[in-house]
Image (tube, rainbow, N blue to C red; front, side, top):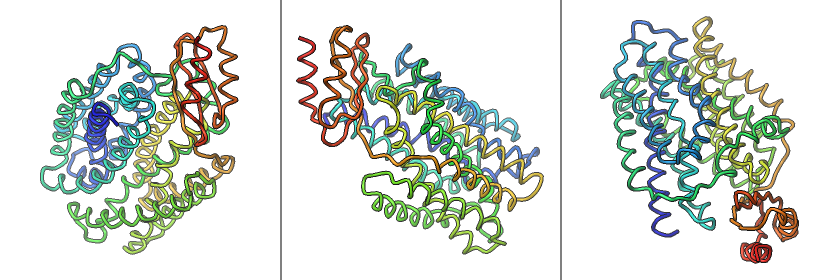
Length: 448
């Protein structure tokens, strides 16, 4: 990568880490710390934990589309402003109801698509996978870091301290976006951002809808877990600030499990491993429902849960990328992200309602039942091989579009091609056998 690509990828990764930490740091602490509020109830706790998911789900696709019209940086800066505003509202909240308002405002900063599009705009095709990998690693790192430091910060400064910190960090991200990330006139979409004309077809795609429902269940269960788990840990005389002592070895063990599963996959995405990971999560909730305050059973269940969660969280986006038609990845990922965040909202609301009317054990049992239903959805998922997506630029005339598509489809390693002569873009899905130079020669032949 050149200096511009390194600077852009590291800066955008840092923005992602700081923003996602702000969303996630409250998850392992809110269920306990919120007991101090006068309007405390399990329902409101669930909505406070998952509330950000509702606005994230609603605005993910519109904000991505707006970044094509207004530009990446204005949309990202607006999203950071909304996130900071929500953080400060939550920090000053004297009731759980006001905290929910703050969390909903936090979610209105739905800038994931715009950040990924900006990363694409400022990177070369040959280096784009590295840029995306750096940002992807940062996203995973932010979740682990948030789970570990959230209880510690809450002990020192309380919930208001967490929200003040996250709002301040969001403001610190703004100059990084404005002045550190390079500005480019090139706007890449299609395989990066949602396109309105593709929505209906992709929503009902037989394989993609299974992944959309799957990621909804996945994030429903992670949110449901964090509504209940911190309270469960109090039964073992573990104070809130000591919860990280459990999370650290649990997350470490689950990462080892992830490495083993990735090794078994050997660069593919076997359907059997996806089903196994879902079984791990279903089993974990079943164990938690009947743990009867057995600490070791709870620890084993949480390790099992995070092993499955980590594998699926890493694998599902790659599956969407492999299945989505060439030139349609941006729309497919926008729909996927909307289902993902709606799942977080569902998890918080479901956990709160169930535990308020019944018990935490019943909420865990609901998680086990949901995971079992999810397994039925996964039965129809087909195994796919990993592919790479390539975007090329062309000045070919529209009458020669179909002939160029046929010529590209005949090249070794090209699985699928899609051309938009009006936008001057060629989208390819390719395997390892693809030769970039051969495709460039083909393009020049048709352009001459």
